[in-house]
Amino acid sequence: MATRRLGIVMYGVTGRMGLNQHLVRSIVAIRQQGGVALPNGDRVMPDPILVGRNAEKVAALARDYGIERSTTDLDAALKNPGDEVFFDAATTQMRADLLTRAIQAGKHVYCEKPVADSLDKAVAVAKLAKLAKIKNGVVQDKLFLPGLRKIKMLRDSGFFGRMFAVRGEFGYWVFEGDWGQPAQRPSWNYKKAEGGGIILDMLCHWRYVFDNLFGKVQAVSCLGATHIPSRVDEQGKTYKADADDAAYTTFQLEGGVIAHMNSSWDVRVRRDDLVTFQVDGTHGSAVAGLTKCWTQHRVNTPRPVWNPDVPQTMDFFSQWEEVPENFVYENGFKIQWENFIRHVVADTPWHHGLIEGVKGVQLAELGLKSWAERRWIDVPELKI
Ligand SMILES: NC(=O)c1ccc[n+]([C@@H]2O[C@H](COP(=O)([O-])OP(=O)(O)OC[C@H]3O[C@@H](n4cnc5c(N)ncnc54)[C@H](O)[C@@H]3O)[C@@H](O)[C@H]2O)c1
Image (tube, rainbow, N blue to C red; front, top):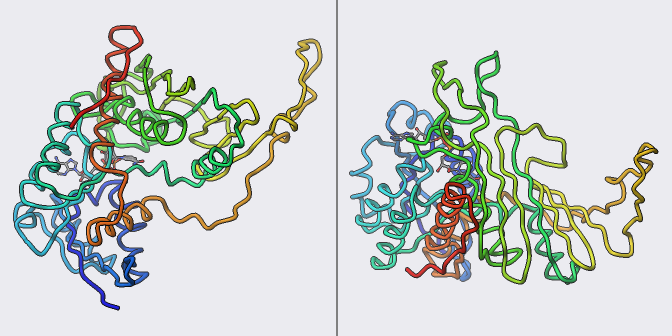
């Protein structure tokens, strides 16, 4: 049994996602467990180089997590043939350019979503990756959430009968920053000019969630809004928040399923989790949060009677049965990293290529168009 090293150039690891999910929960955890096992029993040990603008910050991160290498020089890192993979979790706006540079330098590429801030750029990057014949991938973490894996199991078991509707609620209150509570998301998310906006941010998630679990997305009707037009940034400066911070979106899916998704950074939570999906079918319904999932079968469905004169006697939440935790569900970002590493080194199957990310950007762009033109828009097939 041999252990092989895999050099990975990691960009944007000082950010929220880059640091928590990709560096700490994925790459550092994989190193601590002794690498990734390949089908033939060999192992791969990731050897990252952390790249960022601030030399002290990346050096401190490397020290904190037992990583040998860090630099501010991305070009030099991309030139090093000893590092085969480039990973990006920096801002959305920079992504297409960074991926392009990495592909041109001959790297395999893996990145956060969205793969670009416009469909044209996304298509160009995916084409370049295809021509260069490099391995490529995009993060599709929601597919690995325990709640959605349970939904998939219910679907595959035939639990739903004919599935016909999906209601999704995503969101929470993101503080404005102007009355004693700092915002808990970066300010670029709320500025159009910096690649912000919830439609671009979230519709790329909903695309792969729907395509994979409920039916291919065929059409979209989207109404966006900017409910909070002014916010305070990381430096305490008030700025104009001109990007959409809420989206009320309906999708038509293959098989006649209607999916409605509310995505909002301006909503106070009174539900099971920060994202919930209710799936209704002829034989049963289920509600999934990030980790848990509850079901109600047709034979367990209560018979409520509408009567506004009597306070509600039913406790609706108690009428659902929880899907048991029969497995240990590992962090989804880590599972996807391990799969990508196996794909790069041992050519194992991989279902999250850049083209899947392009579909997400396509849906976001069509959502924005639907909002601007106040109409339903069909989603054409993408050819790369
Ligand atoms: N998969 C998910 O669930 C999920 C969740 C949140 C964000 N994201 C995606 O992850 C990416 C990062 O989001 P985040 O919330 O971590 O953002 P963030 O602002 O916390 O981090 C951005 C990173 O980019 C770096 N950066 C910013 N401007 C730069 C510049 N001009 N030059 C070089 N580096 C620069 C920052 O130093 C930081 O490392 C976005 O594309 C976002 O869409 C994905």
